[in-house]
Length: 279
Image (cartoon, rainbow, N blue to C red):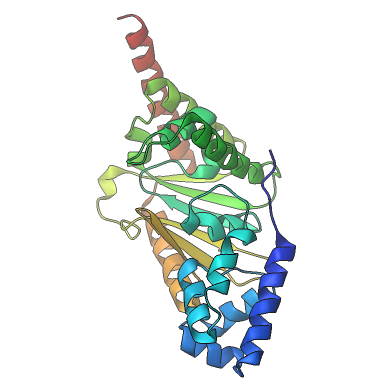
């Protein structure tokens, strides 16, 4: 099942924003000040290259007095079955030429095996039907297809050791998941580094972050928390995220030593699964 994308719709959205902005007599700079958005972000929206998040759309509606038009039009921009706060990041992820992610608790979505992803999507405070879970699973597994091209995007993954040690789905699922990561690392499709517990506090302790670079857009960052996430595009903020990532990377194990640790933990899970079978 292919992921649906609607660049034409984004173009229509941008065209409508430009039309209504000009009808209101605002320049991009004036609208950016009134809607508390960067002028660059507004320019990208009008060009069909980006989409606003819900809060941005609400402020646009308020400033331009458009009666909820821009908020209500948001679902038409993206047919993907993902959390609302992640929809824009997913769009950028598919266009990135380089991605660097830090994962504090879970394996990043683009690296998840079907069994691991199914367990993650089956858990949580809000129960899902099998049908709902399977729809989300298709989308999550589809994300991994960005790794089909060996050369683009370049992918660096920084994993907290907790990601390896937390037994999502049990030892068999974890063994398969960690060996999948090791295979990608050994084939040089991804570069992987582990931040061991022994490091203690580090620069990315606060949570998940994804840094993305593009051919035709300035770099951006995506930060995520519980039921929330936001695109960060202000150059100074993006640079701070990049610096924090570099600092944490400096505390991490080398690629080779990280792969050795990942494979060692996978073997521990395999032995645990074998012991469980003989009980």
